[in-house]
Length: 299
Image (cartoon, rainbow, N blue to C red; front, side, top):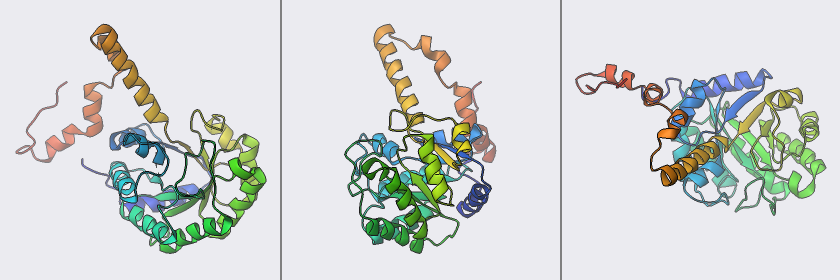
């Protein structure tokens, strides 16, 4: 009932322990709090909160238009709804190093298990678009040092994302990954890798957890969980997939309303009311205080 029973501190500690175990942890992207609860129900290890999804949810492109308070507020709503650890996309940290420091503490207070900060110029671009620009090494390392210095819970994961592969090539990505680890990054997110061999090259270069981004319609092929595990990845995200599927289904439903005037044909594709009520835990609220919550759940 209501929110997760596990405290943010306990989620972080359990996440860091599991991450250190070497298995590949799967973090599908949640596009709202209810989808985060479904991710948990389906047996995944964590929840990812994408900046692109939060932008799209507001009807905006992923070009750095969202603010820290918008992202932290929505991330809190999602993270508190599940017992799973949640990682959030913090873009470039929403400003200069002092802004990065504030971002880390805001995300800690929002109940997140970790975040990633990228090395793009501000305003940033979606990691799988052309025309990206990255900051110089000094600026990239400043951001990570500020993030590490600002955190209060040592289990809060500071992940460094580098977009330099698409700008200066794989060798530059390997070098920057090493420098980011030296600056204190707990994990590395090498964006827009072109092959499994490129993931393997990053794996050979650093001895911290690595994240693979399996976003559709981007620069990377869609590798399986097993393929990524075989080259030593520790985390995999599908950041926008659930939103894309939901919006695709919504578009088809609207077309069906236009063409047929009813959605009867699509009933088998819908989440049943009983399943929704079970996911929301209507019965738990009913048991909590029947003098107030005196409704019954339809079957």
